[in-house]
Length: 296
Image (tube, rainbow, N blue to C red; front, side, top):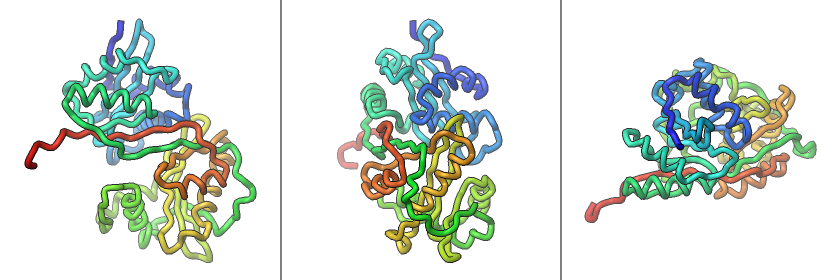
């Protein structure tokens, strides 16, 4: 018999789900990264406070069949045991989420669309694709990638440009035509720098590109936040930056470096494959909304 278990203790949720999520460690980089952050309790900025999360499992005779994690305002992430979709388990989850607001879902394509169809039909909602994604992993950096510039960690002295790069990166990731915000909250940018995971590539003393190690897991690390200003693009800076950060991960003893690309951006996909990244699975991020009424 299927049973939904909702957690309020991140430590218990971690203990119950970590082994199953680790069966597909790279695929589960987001939920794994989040529960590791939550369990450590060192970072409670933005959405990183477990007290506000929705954490649940769907069990069959005590065996977990489905894991669900939502870190508002972000959408739901899902993982099914052995990537086998169980429609009854999904329906059990949906029935148990009546009092929760689900704004979207991110998972493998088959799982995400299956959940979206069931959830939106039950709520008279619609959904649309926000991001069409592909996960890649690397175990060795291509030695033929040109080594341009010098890589270093971001420092407080970078505040004259880094906040603008971070805001510009968000604009690049958003497909809704939003304009760039002028940096306002100094402390939020200083916090990013203090995490010591943001790398800056300099060429001839000038910052030209950046990348970050955003999640460290047992055997792999995730690279994200790759950005090069438009006036520095096409010069090999992003390739060199990502290659150098990937090598740092391998040198730290991790077996693999992983990153996610947007399939609508063929340029980045081509760049990363040249570095040595190989695709391992596709996923999708779907946004939910109520249909507009006539005349609105």
